[in-house]
Image (cartoon, rainbow, N blue to C red; front, top):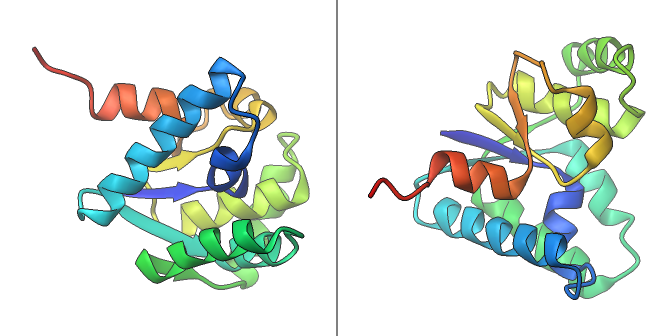
Length: 147
């Protein structure tokens, strides 16, 4: 199963963990990372993740996130196909970088696009090319306990 984690998902463990939603999403994100490490999930990386991460002013965060690139199954580069798709995605109200992330996930034929961004989640509720989902619901729906 192929997954794309956007920049806000990668940054979730660095957010204020006193908020229960953030704490739960962080735990789910860490579980997803565990599944990437053990080969259950294939991580997709992209040039827009590089771009956003390089702009992170916090060196520890930037380096921690960048290390995940080495575990990526696919690294999507910029191209006309990505830009064309991103322009179409902007028509549903996505911001430029968000549209580029989602276009990269589609180009890599991801099964899931994992985000903590409420605006992306709202605008892609009925999206069909890739399932857009938050980390907690991803873990709940994919790795639920079948007892």
